[in-house]
Image (cartoon, rainbow, N blue to C red):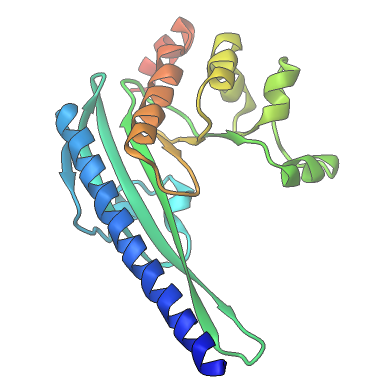
Length: 227
C-alpha cells in the first residue's frame, strides 16, 4: 500500500510538471500572437536589472533572485509600452529548521506619461485594509463612498491624489478591470499578484491610458510646467 501511494504521488508530480510546461508554452504562444497583432515585440529572455530601470516601483524590489521575462515592448496609443512577467523568491523555514524557497510570479504593464507625474498608489481594497483603517491607516477617502470602499489610495501629497482621481476617473476605475496601479515620476505601472493573459496585458494598458486621458486640463498644464 505504501509503495502504491508513493507511485501515485510521483505520477501526480510528473503530471503537474508536464501540465505546467504545456500551459507555459501555450501562454508564450498566445502572448507572441497578441504582440504580433499589435506591432509589439516579444522576447522570452530573462532580464535581471529591470528594478534599476524603474526604481520607483516598489513591487520590483521584493525578495531575491529577481528577474523579468516574456517581455512585450512597443507603443500603445502613442505611449511607450513595456509588459513583462516577473519572478522573485522568498524563504521560510519548516519545523526542523530547513529552509524552503517560495517562488512568486506576477505580470505588469508600464506606460510612459507625456507629462511629469507624482507618486500615487491605487489598488482594490481588501479585508485587511478595512481592519487597518480602524486603527488609522493612511488610506485616502474620496467624496464617492463607493469608490472609497472599493479602492485603497495612498500618496505623499493628498492634493495630487484628489487632482488625479476626480469623479470621472473614479467612475472609470469602478467600471474597469481591477489592477494595482502605481504612478511614478515618468511612468504608470499596472500589475496583479498573478500572471496576465494576453487580454489582461491589453486591459492593463487601457486602464493606464484611461487615467492619463482623464487628467484635468489644469493638472496637465501644471505638470507641463514641471518639465
